[in-house]
Length: 317
Image (cartoon, rainbow, N blue to C red):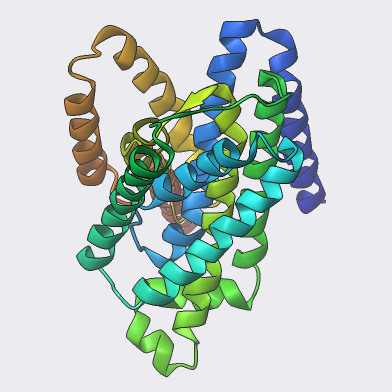
């Protein structure tokens, strides 16, 4: 009964979110797309980085690959066929990158993942300037804001559903073992490389699709837009605030930070990047395991105190 109630609540919430853009004007729909885009990115990022504790800054690399897949192909192929093509490109790149780099750990992986995004951006810039002779490309796709929102909502649901399914199976146990101690997990029989590669590829494909889905919003795209490093940092901050190791953590991190960043970008555009860095530092120090973990710990302590008080009352009685 409890499980059925949870499923019903989740389905009802998804239905309300799906109907949300029908009540909004053009500006509201734009904000809704921005919000749902970061929900999809944060949930997809946490699919790999949450349980393994590998902090990846390669989010914008795959996001940009998705956007540029649409930019390159929209003149020749239907937009609805470009999306699976973009997913395949993201899968191919993630397999190559994963096989080459997932043996790295700690700060080395973080540095490489950040460098990957910059390398892809520079390669595309060189290609556009020296081969095509034009830095940017126009995107004309028959898709409106509401369709983009619904597709992003679908990606978010897929990311959360995959995380839920993985957590309940043997793969979830293997991933958590890797997150706790990778060496011990390997000695216990876990194929560490395969597990990390599988999750990294799943996460990367979803992030690539987010970039491909959002690309028509820009109409005109160039490397500095599609590969803006702020996208990676904001995704990490949002996921960490809510709790990347929790199923619903990224969603709870996106809600307050998206509203905060929208307000800051409008009121403090010149100091936005500095404030973003300060927020990042504050979250790491104040909520190292996320808000949901802090709430769960507080609830457990409260229950323990109640249990102790009940035992005392029983003894006194």
